[in-house]
Image 1 (cartoon, rainbow, N blue to C red):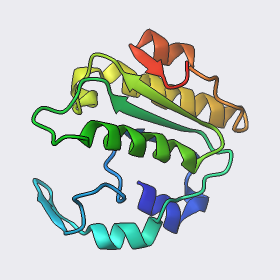
Image 2 (spheres, rainbow, N blue to C red):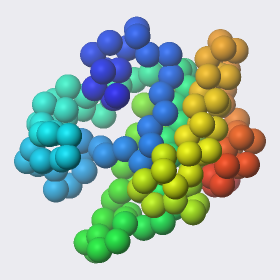
Image 3 (cartoon, one colour):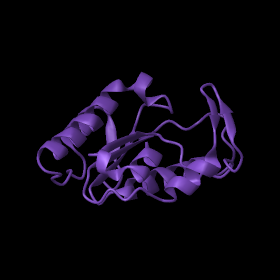
Length: 148
């Protein structure tokens, strides 16, 4: 999603990132094999850098509140730092922690994803109005917003 937004920013009205891997994540220096095929991290990194820059277009970043199992030391802090960094792609963003969910947020707490999407759509429909520090629909879905 970030690569597409960097390459075609005019096609992006807003974005919801759900515990998304960052191309800046340590350990992704080599392409990795996933269930869906090869992820070429060099291409992703070169295509997006720290971007895209979405200006005032709304962005909600959801991060799992339950730690990864068997993660190496320091991984959780790095992962959280990268989720916070992802929220900087817009001046109109919210970074939320999905309290009772692991990385599988869409399966464990689909209401959080729906709430994030609703908050972004509401902002877009109102001309990219500023997202609240923690939209009510996120809090109601078990999301604690960073900084709140």
